[in-house]
Amino acid sequence: MAITHINPEGMHTSIVFSHGVVATGSTTLYVGGQNGTDTDGHITGDVVDQTEQALRNVLQVLTAAGASQTDVAKLTIYLHADADVQEAFGGAQEVWGDHPVPLTVVKVAGLARPEALVEIDAVAVID
Image (tube, rainbow, N blue to C red; front, side, top):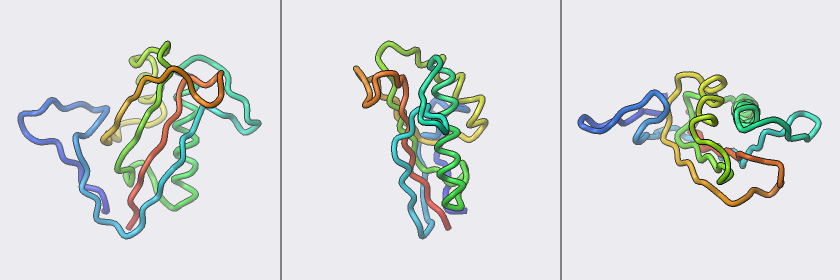
């Protein structure tokens, strides 16, 4: 496996994230920012719906590249300033499951599409 999770003793641990990753694979996949866009290009629903769809989109890109959640070394979640982080994480857990990765959550004033409440990008390392 190309990814080894690092969670040093004495640091808070969570099922949602890892503190670090050591990546040894030979191919790096950069997944561009994914909104909660459906197959018709529409973004609808609340932050939970949009987070779930954005993660499904990330998973689709991973699959197309021959990767999976276990190959993800880093997620960045851009969340609209008015959106609730805990609600977004609830949506994330439904789709992402128990695959903690290092992640950064950034609250932003807005995203490229005004109706978007979340955007997620990823870096994966593939053997």
